[in-house]
Image (cartoon, rainbow, N blue to C red; front, side, top):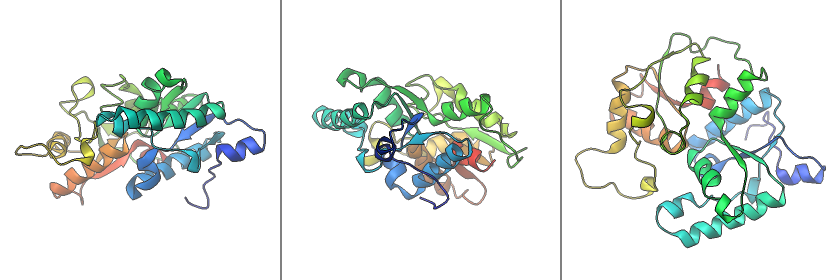
Length: 260
């Protein structure tokens, strides 16, 4: 993490007798994947700029168990989930923000059944909240006139009905938002969800991420915006497959806003 960024842990907060406004759940990709760590840094930059009182679990954060559950290992999922819930409840966490729709869906919808009840927010929803309340202002016109298309993450969009917040935030950049033919409830998966990212592709004549990238390329974008680190990887690979990486960037909305 950059020296300029302030990232307190819950343990440090507790030692000072403080309770943060939100817990930032970083997620496995945001913690360990080099590309996704840039998204984490961008979101922390936004939190610092908006003077948000937040904390992370740090080394106390474990995998949500999402991948284990999607792969059919319910026992492993419950072990991982209960371990996280004990930590979260121990810190009396009430509000969680994450850049990872898989963590968002898992903690929001599957932790309550195991004793973990929290308000869970996707980072695009929180960024929209910061802008709407005046805590975060976009000063430049970095993306004015740029053509941006947004790929809906399955676990954010179809899984939880969150379609507007990412688009509302993108509109604040003064970019031209262009929709793919398949978007919102009809959006195509990038091919990473349901633990598919960690297994060989099913037999067929085309990878799903290439098909989804073709959807995006039809809009003639300069930027493909994502709201999920796994979608970011799949769409980036798709752009490389199409040999368009010199023309089209794949960026998370947090990265777009952090540099706006």
